[in-house]
Image (tube, rainbow, N blue to C red):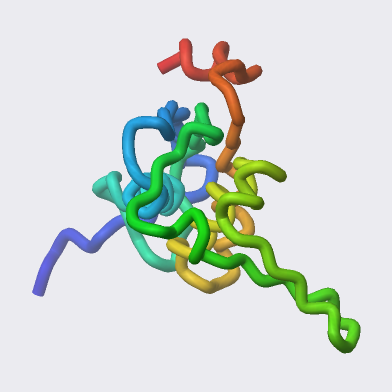
Length: 142
């Protein structure tokens, strides 16, 4: 038997850090996976699936996100309003013109586990279209 049981840190013991991610450096899917792993806390040694000990993520340059292939015209986002015949469709190109931050949030949300912790984790994601953001003081505390 193991005499040293695994310790589970309490909510007050979790130290959340702030990470800055530049979205112009990689493609949509790859950067979404990286952000989701930071939000879940998979990069920490205390990671557990049933506990939320992830960090905050500031994503800048959402308008400069890259995609491969024909995703700009062929990737379609669906939204149903719950009324008969009200299925709305937008392709990626139109969604980027409407709000590039929604594309990033939608991609990261799809990469997170579908459980009760997903809404808490996605709230810690701050997406900005340009390079300007109001969280510079939080990043300086690292």
